[in-house]
Length: 164
Image (cartoon, rainbow, N blue to C red):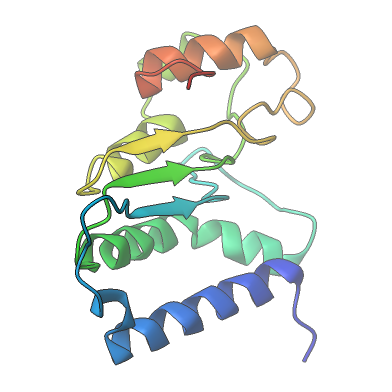
């Protein structure tokens, strides 16, 4: 069986998370004063009804079609950790590119940006979103400039594209 890098990562993280939850390792130690609990997630590649694919391989295409369910599962796992995670950091590729180069399209339609934003609202901890290469996808969607990406990021995700 040949496994892609993305499949291997998903299987490894799922197995590790399941093992830790089963053993209670994610809830073994109480939070100590002065400690900070956080989670880092990345490459969620959320899609919408406008996504058609395909990706570079059948495996990647299949993975993208499971992206939304994967984020919901990740959210449930992080929300179940005790003591609670205090902050969640998303390190990029929040949604999977852009369905249109028309800025107004994103305000007339429910897109992957809206869906991704709604999904992270279900985390118990605040989520801090960073941009990845698919969030700045000017190569796959001609006409989507960096400036347009920045404007959409701020308008739809309610935060600045760069912040500390």
